[in-house]
Amino acid sequence: MQRRRTTRSNGPSEGRSRRGVSRRNLLRGAGGIAVALPFLESMNRAQAGGAPLVRYLQFMHVEGTLVNEWAPSGSPDQMVLSSILSPLESHKGDIVVVSGLENAAGGQFGENGHISNGHTIFTSARNTGNNAMPDGPSIDQVIAERMAAPTPHRSLQFAIGGGNLGEYQALYAGAADPVPSDTVPTQIFAALFSDLEVDPDLPATTIQRLHARRQSVLDTVLGSLEGLAPKVSAADRITLENHADKIRELELQLANEGEAGAGCTTPVLDLPADYDTSEYGSAWDANRDDVSSRVLIDLMVMALACDLTRVGTLQYTNYDGPTFPWLGQGIPGAYTGWHAMVHDIPNMGDVSVPRAVYTWYMGELAYLIDQLAAMPDQDGTLLDNMLLYSTAEMGDPAAHGGWSLPIVLAGRAAGALETGRHSPQDGRTTGDLYATFISMLGLGDTTFGAAEFTTGPLTL
Image (cartoon, rainbow, N blue to C red; front, side, top):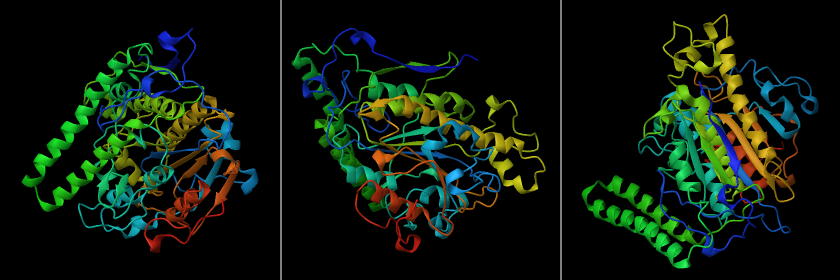
């Protein structure tokens, strides 16, 4: 099978002097599944000096890990990575492996194991009782709101394996207020980068006309929501009002420009010939995750490099039926799929297949770190100015257990995170970890989520 590759290109602007960001050079409007706002025209290096631009990115794989094999050995400052973590060996100095943490909220949520863990992994919140949604925001949205970055997008969310999140709707702007994710690479590319090569010498009137056309899409959406509200239930009206608020926030973001880094350019979307780019094609097929994963990672990294956002999520979404054909091992015939296999891990004499899958996820994390480390940014690389958080929605998949989460942090958060260590945190919670993130990024509170699920920041 031909592999897709995403490379970087200066496009038709190559050989010309690159222009700085200006309002004249930007067009923003509606596009993509989540009404994303596209960015226009190649941009130059962000101005040197001042505080570094710090980004936050979270990476979530599914179905836990082999809890008895995952953690490093050795002393905290001389950690020896396990076989599952071995793809991260070349970046051992760039990471902190955090073991022993528990998603305490998941154990009290009162739904099945996937809903309870999926809806609380980033929220550490109680159950509202409204369609089993949590009563507070996810950490990514809190960070994005408090950063208040002058970027076209407050946050970006990419779903690897399909955008119908269901039990794994993990991101929330507030109580019972889910945040959608985008999943189709071609749609994401079109929304973010398709106009990046527009001739910067186009008359301003043309830019204004296109801007007005994109703005009219937002106006139409708001009008449709207002017309629908009297026809639905009171609970649905609240949902519509929340969505309308998001559209109004997008309108306010039309004036935002961001500060692109030196590596910002137009990515080339090069997919295999047999990758179906239709609405519910290959991007929704978990058995194409090897392709979708790399292309969505590349698009996210470039979006961060271009300062389209400073907060992002990469989430693998299909926990049930993947067979991981690219690993060359397959799911043994006794199991209907990945979900069925992990429930039987305690009874398996040979766990080589689940070990290979969990190692593959860490290989994708290593690829993400590679791309961040290779991207020039300010006085260093994007990784230097990044807080990257990797986890699964649970630790022990056979028991749907929210304990012993497989957590890896990467990047230095502009000097706020000391890396190259193993940090055991037995008895502490994800709420404590998220309070640590907020403190580390200088964004306020010393607690996060429901009070009973957090005691304060960790010492990492």
